Length: 207
Image (cartoon, rainbow, N blue to C red):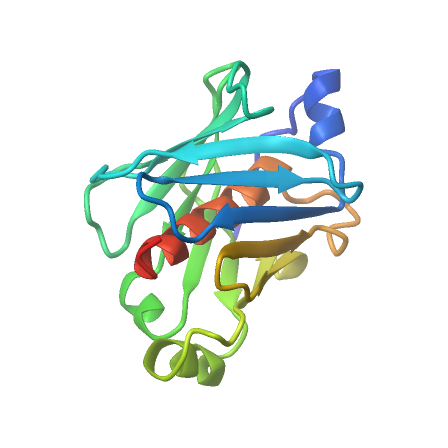
């Protein structure tokens, strides 16, 4: 397994926004047309914003620096329509360069969510996995009130985790990069993964 990932953004703005160890992602669960994601730093400041359009067959999420959507930071685009093993490309908006990709492990994710982290050449460099098979089955067949927790790793080493906090009206995910002390993972890929799973979970709940 190789660990070839694109370097982090170098601009002062991007470095500041991507330099935090912890983020909070909030999404309103019940919306009529699409959904909006606010991403906060530890001080409670909005550092990123994403609005998801409704009725799209292919996910195409754009992440901006704020609600005015004047400055796009990166995008998350599905390659195919309704693919159980869907692959999502993460692209830096300023340079147009691909950062990496996220691929869902099709049938394995039916019972327990599992994703692959891919580099710019689609080589596997890491994985994202739901906390436990037992809890995953409880969520799918008994109740979705059990919060989801995911662990991300690169080269076998943990790099981030995110945990869903249950709220009937607002979906909240705490994203924590503190395990990645050596900076193995590009923050754009980690944030993209959390936003994407938040979007998919919200769609499955009918949000």
